[in-house]
Length: 467
Image 1 (cartoon, rainbow, N blue to C red):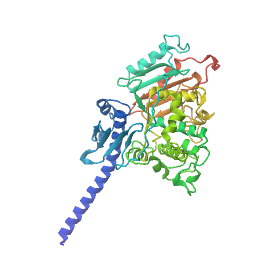
Image 2 (cartoon, one colour; image 1 turned 90 degrees about the vertical axis):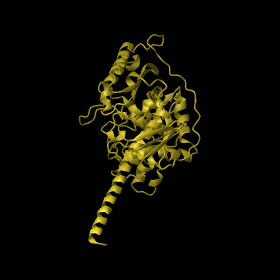
Image 3 (tube, one colour; image 1 turned 180 degrees about the horizontal axis):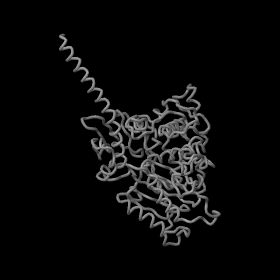
Image 4 (cartoon, rainbow, N blue to C red; image 1 turned 120 degrees about the vertical axis):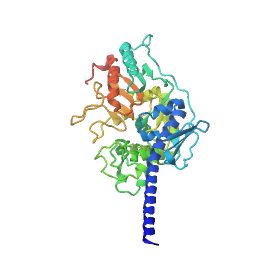
């Protein structure tokens, strides 16, 4: 081979190698975006029951331009959604299964699951409208109506629903166009509080002790990881490394939710960066590991996870619309993917307001509500056990929701999904929405304060709580 031909061959080989590298990298990046679009579109259409013509433009508005290049194909008969990037890069498929919602089919492999638990008829929420003998006198219905009406008239934060319950009765609720009382809403990270609730139900039955090491199969014989307890995981102080950066396309959390088949398994294999209890770090991987491990504990007892959730919590409180979505390995994605209508989210908040008791039956261990709202030692008072807290920090950090008491604690999810539990006024407030491109808490805080101020203190409360 002549020198000229050899050089030409080398140049071509280098160029080809560069194209292969670029192609692989582009494919991996597009795979995350395609997974997001396929999963969200599938769930919003087949779980939430929304019209596809409303879902596609609304759910992906305001996202990076690269997401616009990912095409979505919906097969309503098969109840599947496919997404693929330009030039064939990426590719994802989400499949709907009755009772389990939508699952990303990673490489076409989805673990088989038993038939979903049978549905049940829920008792309607008691209501206390302003013009009735059931009205609650300490509620200023006019002020409440004004606050919610104004919130939806100037709806820049993109509120989708508000439900306000006082003394266990709905006193007002509002829905944006395209949503109503029967619409199931996506949890995003509100699911973490659902996961903690199911752990609590398992604790009550003696199946879990939060102070015990978590029985993660991959950790057997590992001197460091085998010391990590359920409590370490619940309080986000396990010391496991995990990247929770949603704006980094191939971060740990994005790969876990939109690419990997076994979310909890990915977290189980994470490196140990710190000793348990030393550092607080928010990690969706940790929660999926909790859900996966709880599933394994229940299955050893011959109990199905979804049947357990229904019988232990959802059916007793009458919350019939909860759907716990699963990964391709069959474990609940307990960090992010739970659907329920706003009233059923309020029921779960009400269960905590009532210290885990519903209709005289204790569903959660005595003191569980105090456990989930006890600050994790390294969290600067902002986080409990899969619940967020409204407390001021030690070094000048102010509470998330000013004007509302520190004793409030809450479920919180991406783009502004909230269940607020407010003990001093015996009230629960649910807010769902899609506050995208800006922080949701400052957008919701003024409305929450107006709602709070529209409700007086119970006569047996002993006066106004400290703010």
